[in-house]
Image (tube, rainbow, N blue to C red; front, side, top):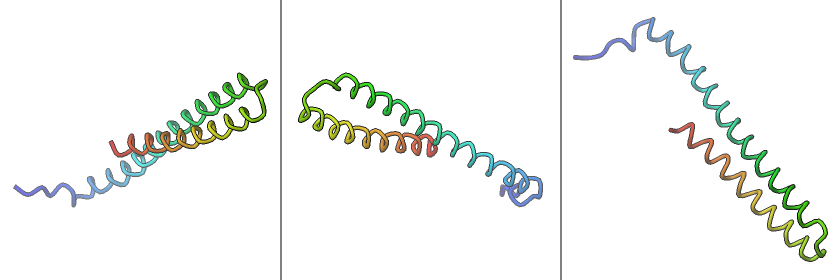
Length: 88
């Protein structure tokens, strides 16, 4: 039996209401997840920098470069995780 409910006005109105809500929810979840990981990565970055603040200049520069690389990778993971949640 064919399903003709999709062409009914009531079903069309429910799509108009549901899709923006679902899209808004998905975007907000992605943003919250990305901001959470952004905060965690920033906190870890600052903490590690405080631990090594009295180290030699060469070591400090090396650590900054390493932490920036980890920081960038962590942001990629955060956005990938958020997008994965949206596609789930």
